[in-house]
Image 1 (cartoon, rainbow, N blue to C red):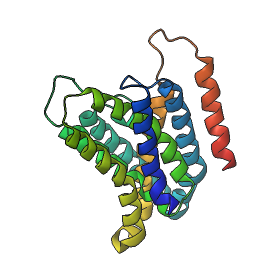
Image 2: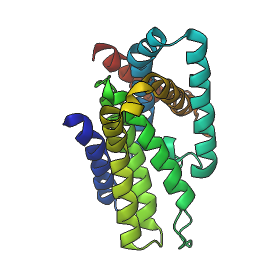
Image 3: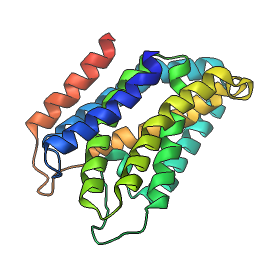
Length: 224
């Protein structure tokens, strides 16, 4: 049951953080994003990637991973990078951000598939979702969208990852293509995690605290 509930808990925690910080940009999200990027990347390399290469032809696997990277690039064209912490919502805009909403839903739905066979991945997704949900909630709370729109956005966003896990567990079609979908998700994870890790501050200074949390993320992922 935890594999269904933990991603939902992550969104709830993110919403709570946004409320505690009084609708401002949550403090410490950059470091949490760096940790989540390293943790998610390490789990992908340690656990998910070897399993997919074991079941699929190596060249095919590489092709599907590249498809995942390209898919994430396309999704970010519409979401503007919300999957790795770049949320841009104009306060004066009252039109519901359908492209952002649909892009995040597709991303969240797909990231639920690897949990079917790799329960450790749920912890990577948990850590990944908390800062994203916090930033997303903070920006939504500052927007001019109605409460119903904001609640609906966050509820559906929270439900998409468990839905992906449920489909991968209970649908014969999904089960038959699970390794292909996992390879595509690897590409998505590689794109997101490396984007987070390779982002630098505006002054491009060496950030010791970021390096520490990155190493910590890799270390914890290794011993899970």
